[in-house]
Image (cartoon, rainbow, N blue to C red; front, side, top):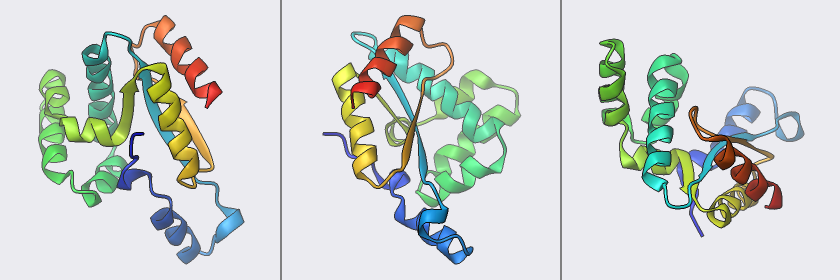
Length: 151
């Protein structure tokens, strides 16, 4: 079974909500789970996820970078952001480390994807939100959704 890691722990987010005056039932904790059914094409799927992460951490503003920096990805994020800001999307994508890819998503067989979503549910996540990286072939999207629906 694949461990979800610190990024997926809900306790710090629930504490922050409580500190902001929104305790317990007033907050739904959602996790964006990025998954691909890759069969024999894991490397290609990881590259799609790597590209998606480069966009999220460098092209969508500060929120993702701040969150991930607190989890120890600051050096990687600096390289990704610098390349992105220089207009070099290829280098920005290449700068996304394997560790960051592993922390932020699941690339695997339908059984591995289903196990990942089930682990998210057991980790006190109210709503796993399944997404797939842009560019994922349609047949892989459908296989991912089928695997997750079974979890």
